[in-house]
Length: 251
Figure: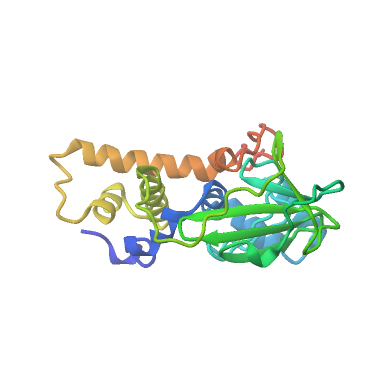
């Protein structure tokens, strides 16, 4: 029987459906924002800009973001370098038919973020997320050049028009279950309560050893992603052991 004190926020699977449409950077944020030490850094440094910036760097961010905001509302300023981010530059020598930068022609719900070094644009459409880094000096109507990490292109990247949401892949469902299991564990739920919450109270916990091991794998996976594995999703280098390792043992 699931303890009602543990089910306030994690038990309804419907609350996690938005996870099915997140890209890798958004998923990285979902795992990072659950880290107890990150949440503590937010409380300690959010009102002190200099110390906040130093604290953010060890998490792979330029600025600390409020961990109470999920990926639908948060705008985490990740350190640059992810393949999914398209760099936009003014085209200094454009051809006659050069592509023009027009903000409102980019489909979807748009968010702009300035992290002190660059202006970032995020455009959400059903089932898709487009991320751009805008170079200084780029203005609406200018000829624009596009560049991805490690390569450049002269045409606009694919920008899907709004459409009916496709069926999410199995990998997306895995992330949903992993985050739900992680939240349950952080709330103090037992492994059996995690299993009942994810797979139903009618599931035979005792005779089906596979169900128990599946719940255990989800809990372990969520904890690993929260405690540094999110950096792989964000294409950040692994955190070296040392004074900036949030999980290193302190004297």
